[in-house]
Length: 595
Ligand SMILES: Nc1ncnc2c1ncn2[C@@H]1O[C@H](COP(=O)(O)OP(=O)(O)OP(=O)(O)O)[C@@H](O)[C@H]1O
Image (tube, rainbow, N blue to C red; front, top):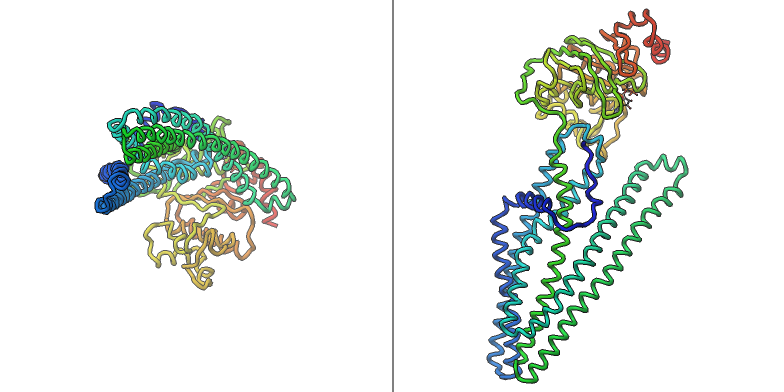
């Protein structure tokens, strides 16, 4: 239901009704720039007019020099000619600037709209769609649309006008010569359409093949250690080589098509020119027309050829932009699968009373992960969730900030079903400290401040102090301004956890979700983290996926999950005495800590 169709693979096809709907939708994005586009259209009309005028002036110039030998007139015509060129330059400059402004504007607006929309989609959406695919829609597909939103759009209206007016002028001057040109035009158009379509298809396939190879390279390079430790370099090189070979073959097919198309078109154009020169030459010899008029004709023929050429280009661009825009609109039409209540009930000052009532949950078609879980956490209590790998512990806690909706039963906070309150309000009251903390590129202060936008420096430092992080942060030469994340300093696991704790402290949620790290830290770091966690948990309802004996010991309730069911519930002592799964887990996991 959420997977995006692979429209990139769709073969080129003639525009359909759906395309027109899409074009209209795309045009709606040009609305804020419509006056600029109108002016651009007018400017291009004027520059077209100058363009049409130029062969006439050249024709006159030739007659004046060949037939009349009038030097003064020749001088005048030079100025007229320069005026015509200057006029054309100015107006086409205005046109191209305004059109670019609209195009860039549309692209920026589309990107912003798409990104803002993406941020609202649920984790489920991002699990089903590859990040690479999504980002390529955000970048390259939108760029493809840019061409159409700008120059193509204007050309779509001006080029037919140029063609028709040129032909009209030619007809009025000499219909026989015009008929000769017209005999050739269809050949050019047909060749361009047929071969053009094949070239377009090959181009698309080429892009797909290159993308495939890129994806492979990206995956391999980011996992270079795995590749090298298995000495799989030759194998990877071969695999990449095969993929590149595929793209090479498609590129050669495209080159062959191009090698046929271009000469055909050029031949047709020059043939038309030859015919015009031959027939026109006869007319000049018979004194039916002057040499100037013949020259005018030749120039107009070039004009027509150029227009026909750009027109087929426009068609191609339009097609690829429609393909790209369909991929963008698919994303924009993706509805969040966590419906917001029409009339959300206010949570108010949250106590932190959380109840699971016969909760069932499945990620998709594949079987239930939670099968009737009931549990209760009273305000301020600590609930430790334990169980074997795959039992559903992470799933259980992911339901509390409503990353997913239950498929059966309900979860309440202070008696309100999670689905009755606004998602935003609910999440302001739920804080998380995950096993692996993601730090964004930026300073340490920014990363802690993520917990509460607008937090002042004093608050950030206070949170860091409470999280036992102040000391190591101050030890950096740049302190809180130290850059972390992809290109910043690398922090140790324990340091990252303490930053996450500081971030959660700053957020100050009533309900807390902790996922204890499985990998053990050295004892000093461990102690600092534990201490910070104690501070964080104080007075909050806490769900903790527990891996440490000290955590389960101090929990008010331990919930033992197995295969999506709660099989035992109670305190450490109660459960130990009762025997069963908890006792087994204890022997396996926690016992050595005690030793
Ligand atoms: N995003 C997901 N999409 C589909 N299935 C998932 C997803 N996340 C988890 N599962 C499946 O749900 C089941 C429970 O997974 P979960 O991560 O909740 O278990 P866990 O008890 O936290 O395991 P562990 O201790 O190994 O982290 C597993 O069978 C897992 O394959």
